Length: 321
Ligand code: NDP
Image 1 (cartoon, rainbow, N blue to C red):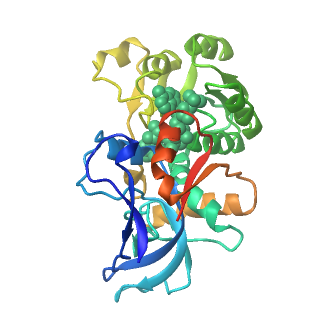
Image 2 (image 1 turned 135 degrees about the horizontal axis):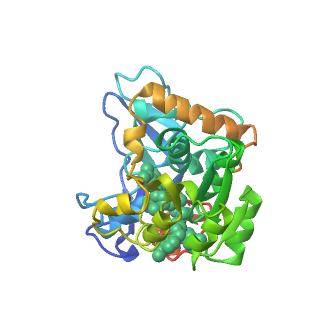
């Protein structure tokens, strides 16, 4: 017997209930993983609230790290006892979770289990955003929102390692200090940010904006770009952006707009391995710092969602069974 978080219908954080459950049985190409920690991500809140449709009853969580407990008959690359992490696990808010063999990332020796749980989803996201969605190079001017968040703190460090100039927004002094510590060149509050971004970019605007805040920042993000700049809308922490007229892109400077999602940037084993090797190696050798801002017992998943949605968290939020 173990425990899992179960939601029986869409709703607020209170729908997340801690229940006794049986460990699931792995399919032929799956691993049964004893979860050491599960990552809490904004997408878990979209699924819980009904913004993204999922079947109920539903156990959230696609990110975790832990030890392989059992393997399916057709698994060739892993054995019980191996340490793995994943950004694409199945029902990870639980004592035991299933992971498809293809989605399991071996954890290098230099990386502890909690850091391994904190890194995959936000780390792979930061990696694809700056290497593939828009290929950032030395000297590029970049604006990213929510710089003290999970994706934000990783993005700042990876962008600085590429030699970009990084402008970020945050809501509080504590978050500002974290964004500066991570290496941001300029840290702004949201109020009037497009004006300040222009001032900081000689009136031209930035090459790219990474916007995971969505509704509240979208118009300002467009107004912060240079001619032919790219707006990468990768999330909706403040709510989804309403439909827009494509003519706005023309009027604002022949802009590019994209709305990427992680799965399309993990198309095959080679792509997954490239991205995960780079971020795991950087974390293991200390060049990429992973901030675990909060850890909750699994039973307190509802509180973790309240705090994430209430802007009270920084860096990564973990659940520990
Ligand atoms: P964060 O840790 O960044 O938390 C969200 C942050 O957004 C908050 O801390 C807050 O920072 C900021 N924010 C601004 N307005 C609001 C609001 N009204 N309500 C809540 N938060 C607000 O979360 P993650 O790092 O997990 O995710 C960041 C974004 O990236 C999310 O939108 C998520 O969906 C997206 N994402 C997208 C992926 C993809 O592949 N497309 C993959 C992973 C994440 P502050 O207080 O400083 O404003």
